[in-house]
Image (cartoon, rainbow, N blue to C red; front, side, top):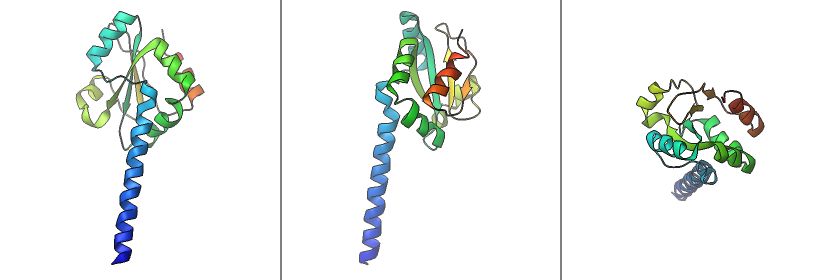
Length: 140
């Protein structure tokens, strides 16, 4: 009886820690704004920027790795903030946008001009340096 209580307590603590880690990792230093695509496009027009969309899923290991290692990097945050209005879209809850932007794997990074034209997408996780180079390779 005591063993099963201890096991349940351990499981509950582990889940709480995982939930806390997920919350912290998805924050990315406030890099991503809670905006719709339309709101992000409007803001991008006002600020003469592009829109950066991170399509992710909670179950996606490379997505979590990007949050932990790449999007938390201060140099990447500064670089993205200077050029983009950044938003995150959950793949599992936004199937219409997944279809619209042709998302076939995760993570996928969709880049839009301020007038809504889609630039080539970038897929897959990578280190901060490699991520920046991959995004720069598709910019106009």
